Amino acid sequence: MDVSSAALAALSGLGFGLSLIVAIGAQNAFVLRQGVQGQHIFAVVTVCALSDVVLIAAGVGGFGVVVQSVPAVLTVVRYAGAAFLLGYAVLAARRAFASSALTAGPAGTTVALGATVATCLALTWLNPHVYLDTVVLLGSFANTYASPDRWFLGAGAMLGSIVWFTALGYGARLLGPLFARPIAWRVLDSAIAVVMTLLALGLLLAGFSS
Image (cartoon, rainbow, N blue to C red; front, top):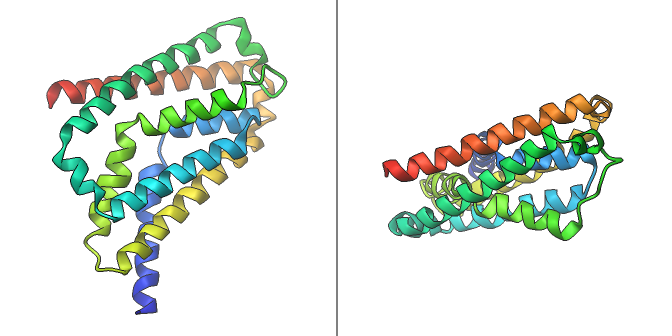
């Protein structure tokens, strides 16, 4: 095994993986909010990171070819994901404009662990962009490398996801003083509602144009 080749592949995977996940999206917005609240951070970060690890492994293993050959799979996920994102957008908007937004910080109501994990799983696995990024795009990129280098590339991308979600989830706590003010929660939830709505509309429009 060529160590330098493996290291370059891993670095390429790290950079490519980060370029795909470091963006404003449904999953990142949820992790950010949980991190600011200080609620179930470890569980949320673990679910997101492990989901990415599984999806990246599937992409590197060639599952992306299967997904591309059966477009109906992504179609089902697209509409299910759009419906869920719209529902979550409504909930975020209600938090932003209702009195409950005033107690949405760490001292507010704590959502049960099971409900938090279920929401996190839905935001991850009902999002077609997750499959396109990790399974199709990253998988296609990885398969331009010969084995075993493509698995080192995949490992680099997995590391990128783990580092990103850990930094986002636990780093959000630094914003605690800012979110001691109710207006900050209103702004955050309003932004989340807008992001979720735009993502849902994007999925629906992509479905109509395909």
